[in-house]
Length: 167
Ligand SMILES: CC(C)(COP(=O)(O)OP(=O)(O)OC[C@H]1O[C@@H](n2cnc3c(N)ncnc32)[C@H](O)[C@@H]1OP(=O)(O)O)[C@@H](O)C(=O)NCCC(=O)NCCS
Image (cartoon, rainbow, N blue to C red):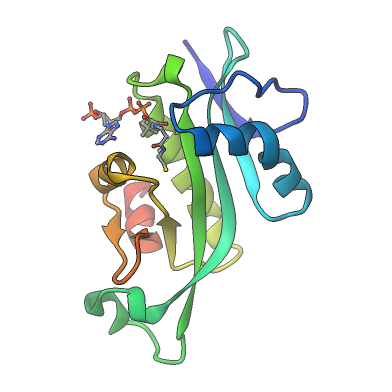
């Protein structure tokens, strides 16, 4: 089987996408394309080239976090003037139930992180931020090195770490 990631386009049938989390399904079916049009986020899909079905999707937006959320070990290496740190939010991330458990979550996460890394060459971004919906999602991100942000349900992965992954 082969899979391709590409920007969301309106020709794709999103009606049947089901990842098991209503919030993520409804967002993708009803709101994602509007958000893309309004430039609130960019949305990318993973297509099963055999069936043309959507195996997964994710969204990216520019974002900022207070430096007070970042652990001391990271903060002390940063100039104090940066009270708000530029980041990229991996806001939504899901694999359709028919495609879960086949390694595609990992494939899609790597795709998203590479896209963030490439973007950070043009627009500075200190880290990728995720906002896990629940403990299961938190465990998934934890597996790939994301760390908790203090006083926040969010998690982050420094761009420096992502760069090392692709070196
Ligand atoms: C979480 C999700 C993206 C994982 O996708 P997937 O395609 O089933 O995951 P993969 O098959 O690529 O799994 C890759 C690895 O992550 C592990 N993994 C998968 N889900 C996990 C979880 N919730 N917690 C911990 N590890 C998890 C797998 O065991 C596998 O490990 P291995 O490589 O050591 O065998 C998918 O289950 C999903 O879309 N869930 C609903 C939406 C959601 O929770 N999104 C998260 C953002 S809020």
